Image 1: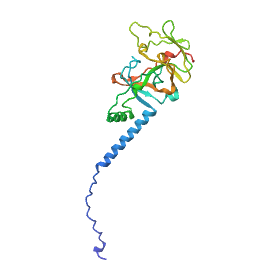
Image 2: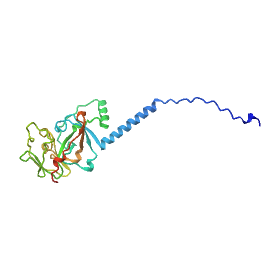
Image 3: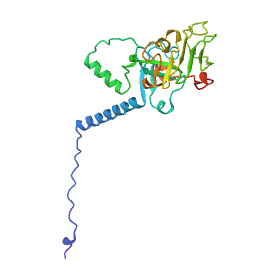
Image 4: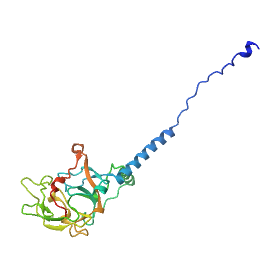
Length: 247
């Protein structure tokens, strides 16, 4: 056998690999998938966990100011329930809000607002909701007022001066007498700007008799997100009600 027979075969010449060019469609597809997933996640969060609202009136000053944007916890109250002092957002129980006609908007504006509402950026239904502080829960006997102008809950006066918006020199809000026992599954609610709040006191002639059924409650407001200068938690002042016995 000759040396030529034992020689290794010559390796084929290496050809340069051509890079495959990625078309624009895969990039567009990836972006669309990311956007759709983000919208779905935001929609789930908004539907079951947290919603955004803005404050349309001054009834909760100085705790909340007009145009403040807040976050509302929809999730934990299902397990912990609501307490006296909680600041809640709720749908009109009937007759609390004036009937108003919303002027029509261009379809493109409506569509864009709807998309923003899905992800919690826009809050187009804020005008259809109210926000107040819970003063009485189911079974509580709430009375206004004692000789000092204080509300009493189950016979115990509560000192609300820490959160009420009172004029200089004013020690208590203007008295509007009431004597109610809160039905189970409902709340008696008042605004912190007590002299400028159309709350439970002014709706006793409506179908709910001034009470807010729990099924109308969207959730508990817990955070101011805008303007950034006011960013921070919302104080429920639970200690104000610490001495109130169960109703």
